[in-house]
Length: 495
Image (cartoon, rainbow, N blue to C red; front, side):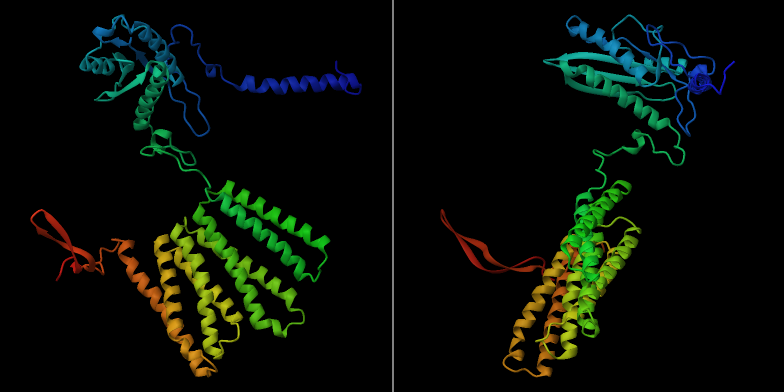
């Protein structure tokens, strides 16, 4: 009798409960789950078949019976390769059992001659077992290993042949047998239940390498850390405090939260490099736009513009991150799409400044508000288009260069309009010329890059009639002397 009121009795009761709890899993485990011994001949399957371990959502499947035939040797290498063949017999039997096969050693023949393929297929069909027939041949310093696998339900043999060094024979033999069995199981396996990954034979077919997960982790972490520090700085400035004892802890806390959040996001989702840069564009351009819009439009009416400007930047950055995350929820982002979002913010900033100059008629005043509105709407339009368009990074860069060169060229040509003391009309004309050159350059660059973007639409190329060529267009031959002919020519088909 255990006295629960006595300390020793309570200790005995706790020990009894712990022993009973530990024994429950052993009592609940069925006796058939014990694995058979692998010494000597493998244990024959029961009438219901030997059950393989069944995981959650997987039905138990009886182990397939297999026969590993003795390694066949070429007649001229029978004596020299006999030790290799004996070691290979034991290795393949152990490997087959490791792969979940029930190896039957009773039907192994003593002969090391290669069986005929038709006979091998007939034996497999009649007994409904797997027959593994290895063979060896010596090729100089290398060994030619041939593995043939015959299945009762198949109409053809699965064969693999490799030449390997003698030291690598054991490793390559195990890998070859594993691949043959995986191909056989992959072809006959049923569709996996929902929530489970397909077997590697199906999942990795035709793929030389599995891409790394979250390649954009470093980019995302760098952007998130910097933005986290900026958030801490903005909170300190918007509070009206300039105490460094508050500033540095806020910087550290903000940067740490940003870095930790980026690591968690990269571990939870597969974040590519383009995804990280697209999300970064939604972080920085709306933040810049918030600062510029407030400074140019509302600062002169505020009591403390410094505090509210930083708060406005925080609002813009939060809205931008939210919209960028919604854009990424539609699918993976391409490199061209990420660059397009970044480019939209920059080009929009410049166009917004030109629009404000044209409205005011004063190019001497910095167009802060216009730059802010342009950056916000330019990024928003480009980020939305990036989720729908299939565009490459080279196309985006070409359009950017064309827009900048066109704008600068037109501004340089129209620069006499703003010499000395220009009027408002002259200044507006100069701004209009710069904006027109900006748009014209972007349009020309877009037309030039369309053929590179494909052959996608199979549209005729802009240079289908050829191009002029300046240089060597021919050769003059006088006896043994040859002289190149320089001039202007046309290369291509003339309509």
